[in-house]
Length: 499
Image (tube, rainbow, N blue to C red):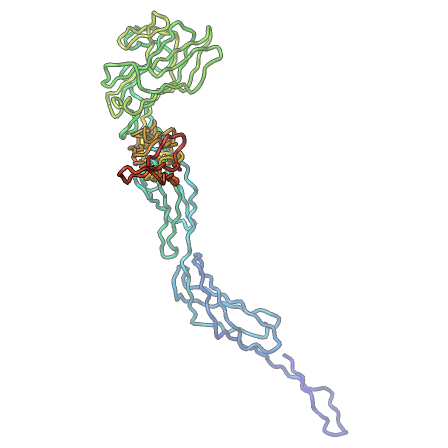
């Protein structure tokens, strides 16, 4: 920089100075320091960027100087006491006059990062289903799963198998590592009853799906005959203690005089009997021209298409549960057949041993068998408070964990009766109230629960008696007394007191 020197004087009046002399010189930047420099701890982000804080020392009063504290961790992984190299910079209007002496010997911490698992609500699943879980985690690490109740579902990898009916908690977890903390989150999963497996059956009884020539079971060959059958050998799936069977199909038949079809069952694969003890249903109606089409619980299907029309009926099902299914479930010899029934009487149909005739053109579609497994249910029925004769009616409040309604009975209806869930007290004594739930296709009958209801006698009070104060001497101490009025008698009961 140029330096002008002033203050020179002429040596005498005989001389003058033409100019002040000049020289050049350097002004070096003032060095600043950050004696309290420190590294701010950060959460693992897979980078080596560091932030440094502290106070600048050495700034001349009035100057504006700031600093930006940056640096580099020696490694990006989580840890403590990691070496940091400062690369901080100065800023502000006066920063050009200063230099920064970078702090040395710095260390800092990189803390483990938290993981966020995305695991949405789980819809209800059917018993027997196998399905995949799909939680994700922002770290990219592997998610593992666990079930709080392995009697409801089991988990292998991300595959869940519903092995029972009920509710369990599915926990999605990610183990921590050097850079991430462990994380977990949970969702509730409810498994409901449903067909636990649906099978396509290999038939040994000449089934035909579709129109064409077929030999009817026990009948003759006809180009207008179609029969369908199946046995208990599945081509896929595994039966696990089934307690019910659903046989289903869709049916089409043109106008015909042979309108009776019979569902028959066999427990040995050879001897067939007409279906019984089950529930027959048709899910869909038929063409408007068709009338009187029906499917009854004895397995008889009455097909009555209108003249010149074709009848399409879908969702024909026959369901067997409980004792009605016991001979057929878990039985590899189980077989069934759906046959055209020769019916010379017009409105009657043949027994299992009768001769079978032919039907008009018919077609069977979507033939299936589903096995059901009934789940256990329990009844919660607490003890009953003692009652007193004359008390008002009261409600019973047993519940079944299946959600099905509970029924009640009284062992002694002279003491108390039950209508629905309402108890009416009739006299003092005791009776046993039994809570029951019969079950349905999804749930087996519950074990009944009994509670004793004790009804105590009602206390009466007697008003002041009337005493005859005088009597004629009779040699005794007996006094004549008239009893007072009774208070507390129930309804129209007749009660008297003797004095």
